[in-house]
Length: 454
Image 1 (spheres, rainbow, N blue to C red):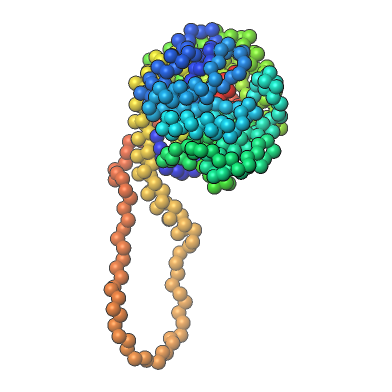
Image 2 (image 1 turned 180 degrees about the vertical axis):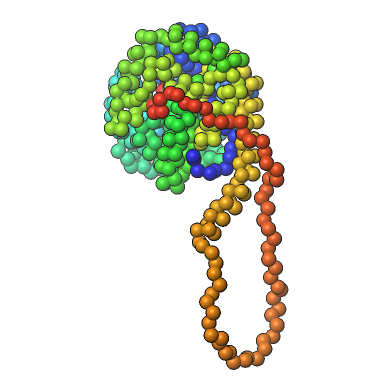
């Protein structure tokens, strides 16, 4: 289980469909569009239905079901200006941006939006994009080394006056970005997200990132990554928040939801899925421990290209909500969601799933608040028992003391024993949480990065 921390409501993000083809590589009907007008309406709708973030995808070449792609940073700024509270995360590639130039763009977007701009640093998986643009294609761990320097330069540009940096990939010599991003409570600078699954990705997140995005995973896979990334962050005196990808299908009945999933996979664009699989197959084997992205993804998994089906957010609103809250209990801070029919399903999520999630969260937190004092008493008892019984000291010969003159009485007030400390909060036990772990029949190992739409 993750370390104890202040409990916060789970946050929700959605994949922005700013590339054509929707969020599944399938010929099933998807009432989703990549145009700005559609996405502006979607952003406002999502903001009204409980979403905190939106993630714009980054692609530079057509393929794998995405014939058209809107550029992520420009699209993000447009969505920021169309909304009031929604934070928009632009996916970006080191190697195709200079980080200090991007820092200037994001700082400007942050001012224009009142401090709501963020970035998702994608180390890169699609070799064809880099070679088509005449940029070198680095091996796996070198891409993560470059990405780490990229993030360090972003942070230095936003926070130092002037910024200095000397790395293997980037240099800053007295760079003074002005204006700096606006001061926003709860953050030191615009938030930096990062995707990954490999050992290199997890270690990098612990050193420099604010958020770690994971591809879709079952409960066991999430727990393993939360613990490893958390340990890496603690080793550097930091905390990294954890985001999980999931494709959500909430229907009136479980049978209807599962039938929708079956139809998506049955109507998969086989040629496009196989092409994507062939393009990323080398990435899964790029690391010695074979923890690279999509290392064990099946054909069915790749129909949703960030393994969103593996999180199994499929069923009735009640079933989906219970599973979401169990992910939160295991350390997930944010769910990044995709949908088949965005406008209808985002509204349905806000109307039917989210209220149950909030109710279950409140119940879970109340139960934990009641349990904490009991657990503290049990720990104290265990410590006392381990120390052994207290024995009277052995008898000794009496000691004769010469009398001395009586001292004047002390002017100090007598000391009284402090009264018992009572725990804040309710004194009656809350109803137990209904969020119980579900069985996970699928494989227990999982894939890598997020943000680059195949």
